[in-house]
Length: 168
Image 1 (cartoon, rainbow, N blue to C red):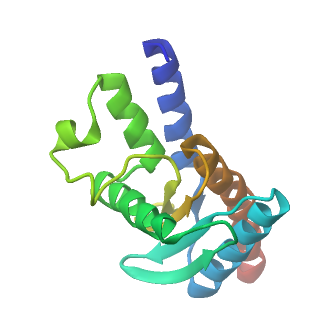
Image 2: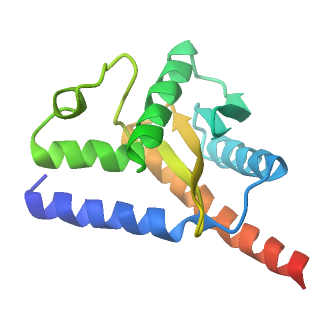
């Protein structure tokens, strides 16, 4: 991937983070998001593990057929990247790649604790900041990331409509 391609992809990933912000986030919304991810993964025949957190609290977890305990470890390592760096794990990984450095060398982190592979995305409340993470593990990193973003895009639209209807 060329430097121009890295820059273009990084810009796209930042735009996703800006676009995919919620008006609010509740425990029932975490469940709704989780169910949507499970449904999308099953419809596509993907065996993935899904993890949704608000702070340190796990609000949703599902391990579909075809996953293993390693997928749980991957979700942990990827979500730590989001929490530490404030960006999707895919963004952090591509940013390191563009700089020609590994995450471990660039930030002196333990690779057993952190993994900058796609699949973890910040749950952000607009005008408030990051309050949690949504993570998928089981596919190649770009596909893990894409699954989260695709489902989150529809979910954000639904959340805004639900909030607008509730305030009317």
